[in-house]
Length: 131
Ligand SMILES: [Zn+2]
Image 1 (spheres, rainbow, N blue to C red):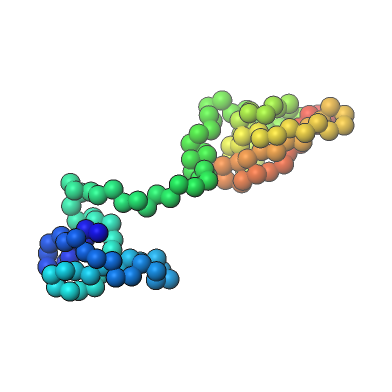
Image 2: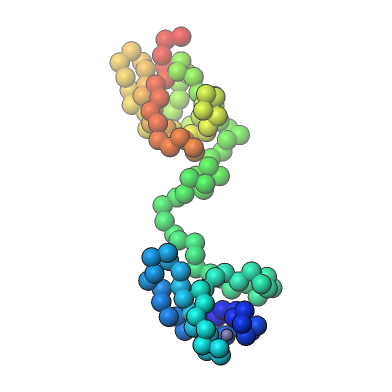
């Protein structure tokens, strides 16, 4: 793993000494000065930025979720309104946008919505309530 050694003031292909420490720091050994140094993203020279595989693929993050929402199309949420799966809502009270994931029919023409909000997470909201 290539790393800049501040002692030698040069880059070396260093061997990994330990990568199982509790704090997740990868320790490298400089082949020149034999010094042990923690591996860190190179901020010294931007020109030669090596792709660090730090972005872990995983479930869609809340950030990405928020970016994917078409908030320009958001409908203001009101308990008396009617919404469908796939609708983007804006909840004024929370200042939060959400996507309708499910709609469950309730007696009296009302509905129970399962909405995933950007900040609040998954919430249940009623709709179609008599004004
Ligand atoms: Zn060194």
